Amino acid sequence: MRIKFLFLLILSLFFINPVFSASEKKVIRVALSNKSSFEYTNVRILSESPISIISMSQIGSNAQIGTVEAQKVIEIRIKDSLYNIYVDGDLKYEKLTEPLLFSSNSEIEVLDLNKKGTPAKYKGMIEIKNSKNNLSFNLINVIDMQNYLRGVVSNEMPVSFGLEALKAQAVAARNYATNANMSANYDLVDSTAAQVYYGVNSYRDISDKAVYETAGIYALYQEHPIMAQYFSTSAGITDDWDDVFGNGTPSNNHPYLKARYDKQGQKPLKTEEDVRRFYSSLEGGIDVNSPKYRWNFEFTREELENILHTTLQQQSKAGLVSPTYDGDIKIEGLKEIKPIKRTQSGKITELEIVSKTGTYRVKKELGIRRVLKKNNAMLPSANFFVETSGETKAGNLEKETGLIGIFGSFDDEKYPQTFKFIGGGFGHGVGMSQFGAYNLAKAGKRYPEILKHYYTDINISTHPLTVLYNEYNVWYKTEFYFDRNSFKNAYLYVNNHKGVSEFPFKINDLDFSETREIAGNKVVKINITQYLKDGINTINFAPLTRENKGKYVIYRVEFN
Image 1 (cartoon, one colour):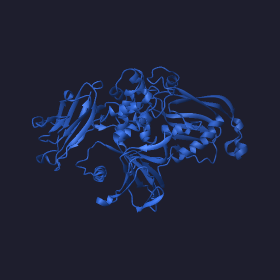
Image 2: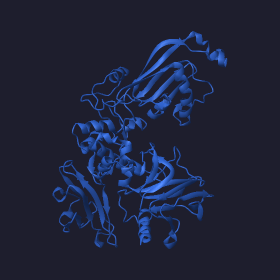
Image 3: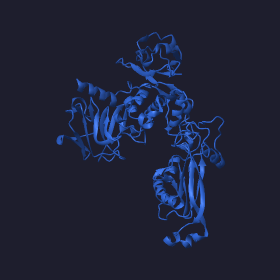
Image 4: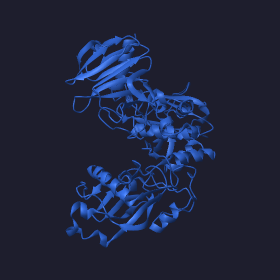
């Protein structure tokens, strides 16, 4: 019975007909990392329950390869793009083709892979798929959205920030995962390149509660889930997406990611004097209690020259330095670190580095932070200004390189002895500040208010779901958590621009079958607050009737 059920589940995840597929992403594929790599040539797993092995290249009864007993170590090895499977050291199956799925009723432990200092354990299934070169494979956790978020939220935000801030984080993380599509093999990775995910090892009671009490809840802009960018600490002003991640010119790609000002009446930082004044002050910021609200780092000139020699080469390979710095002529005689472009918050998005041996421009806030490292850690943000002090001669470059004839004698000029970077904030500065969410929650704000503070013109809603005709009478289902402490009202919106003649639905156990009278409207809005309970609620829409075949309606629930 379990094999039949498992096979049907797999079909629903991988081969479901688009007619029946919900537009809400319920399943996430996460590539699991071993240190900094997502490539494996072998891996070992086990579980407290039997593990079923399924070949997704086979269909029907051949898909089920076999079952391995509980607590038996399964080792998967790739050879010539095919897989051999060993059980407790003995070869059990050989020359299998990918993709392979490993499923258990219990958590699956990945041996030799540690997360948070203990062996990594995952709910859901483990999938094996060949990487691009077919010489290694990706190790992928196939997991439902809610359990994925349980493995994310406590890593992305300290649980000490409290329930309402964690709820805002849970919604932002759900939105982020919904929009993610990093590879043909997987949606997301488990590292800071996406959202930090450590599986079961990250489950905590309060963050689990935040995930549960926001189930089915999204931040939408014009009925689409937003790409909910977030970061650690705002210095008092967040930034437009266009200025930080775009090319600096206005676009309509992310209209909900706009600059937000903590202090009423605050203006954009347009001049270098504005930047110096703002980042020399502690006033006016929601995040003032963050250790990274204001910061400074000091370098000697020689120290910074040595750092730039390495980091400019690294960022040149990423295409962020012009002209390309190959390191043949070492940076010496550093004169100036000069901002060329700044955002409304004063964030530098183009920087000029002026030295006796060359002038280089660095683009993008992350490239700038990676170029200016201290103790092998990049600057917390690109929101800074630079102060120099002291003067000294450039050094012994002419003795080391014999370049006196090209550059002249370095004894003719003097250079700053120290460079001090004074700034504020931590992260890219676009979207929701996590310390800001914490402080707004401390001030009594609920998570919907926190989200609306950082994301412009959004509404809080369930994911829009498209209802079609299907001959198998498969109903369409939306589940969500409703809390009268967070919301006063809930409205069911039905987009009926295609002129569907009726669309029967149920709210929990209440049947709303007679809809022909309201179906004449292009948009139907119904206050359904009275029909909802505090906790998980369900809305089910019947498939459209045969007379409405070829049409559709889209429904969602909006909260305020």
